[in-house]
Length: 213
Image (cartoon, rainbow, N blue to C red; front, side, top):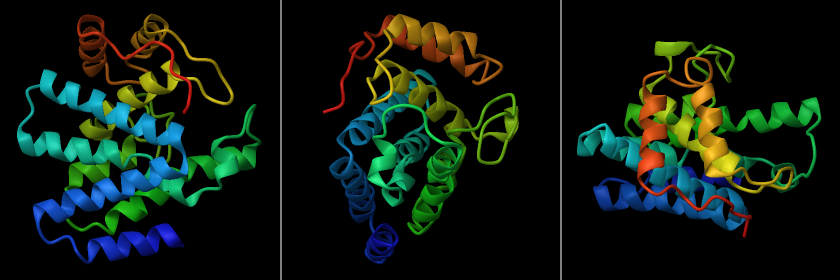
């Protein structure tokens, strides 16, 4: 498929840091060009992840890995039908299974970029896992989930809740943060969750209602 071919071509020209950054940016731009709402979502998730890295005093290398993982966390959606991503209403079981496959598809694409650190790949792999083991694709539990994946999960869910989608209205920031707080120890890491909630409560969260462009 085209997305895998482009990833292979990009990987062949990624021997220095500027080329590596360009590779990631090109893939992110491809996603945004195909689906503006998903692309904007990626940018916002990445911004939130960087704010978390700052709050946790992460090193530049850790922060870069998290940033790349956040930028590419939905890249597997490039391989899915556009009609699936924009369908209003409830998905059929077969459609839901196909949508969930974006995690493995994205990891396969990203693995082709051999310069990506393990933490970035783990963030892509784990961003739909849940602390209680009821997530996907592997049903990892608690400490089995990478820290990058735990952070991206928080950012991903917050932005999904506070953004309008074809199948739902946007939640307010307060509603979304209350939902996330209630999920600590079940959906989300119980230690990272209050850090995330406090960060958004005290640092001017994103606009509360965002319609897709």
